[in-house]
Image (cartoon, rainbow, N blue to C red; front, side, top):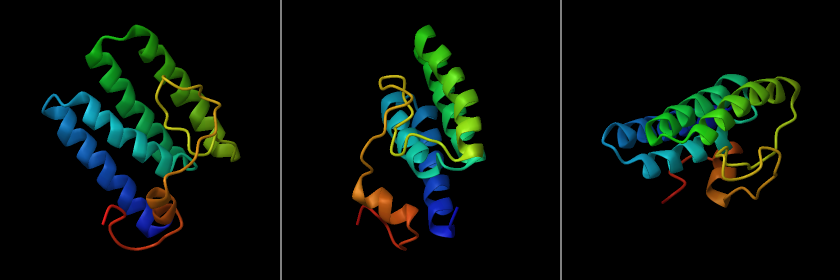
Length: 120
């Protein structure tokens, strides 16, 4: 993971945790999805994003989504290890874990190592 990508992943996770801690679960989850897209090609960031999503789904009391996140965590770990991930997938249980999705241009720039605030 390049330095820009790593910093962006860390920033998204930090913002998600801050929002989740204040009860803003959906806003926090949106940042976890961004973190997932940024880091899904790498084992630790991929697992961290799903672990965090699992915590949100537990707080929401959604058993099906909890099971879905556990499955995504395990399969995602192996997928990242062998280099087979559904690029751009947001990681939530509202989409198939195998579906490839378009990557927002600002996230793609970060993943390519472009410096600066992608939302500026």
